[in-house]
Image (cartoon, rainbow, N blue to C red; front, side, top):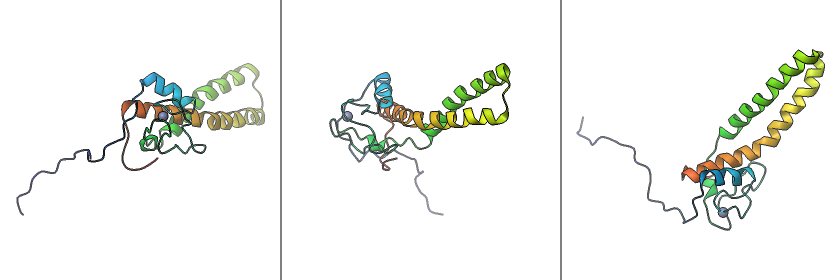
Length: 141
Ligand SMILES: [Zn+2]
């Protein structure tokens, strides 16, 4: 076996990111929740329902490099669960309705909350990632 140098991982710093304003964490969180660019707040964050614009047209922030992956659905499930489950328990303890009434109330409520919160939560996730510089060069996510 030949002598070799130890392999150590280093981040790829060969690609320079364009200059863009780095927002404060809370500002980026609020702008992301509102569906606007976390860096400048001047343009929309989403091209489609959950598709993030690759680059902000106003401030050139590389929003597409914030790969949120499975974090927004995870956070959405946590939030919806913490709303729906206690509500179900209160309804059960208070009125003890039939199972079909529970289903008629809480299945649509869960779906509506999940669909309604998914985009703002993804916006907040992308906002936090933008503020903290958690941007990859592996492509849009
Ligand atoms: Zn921007």
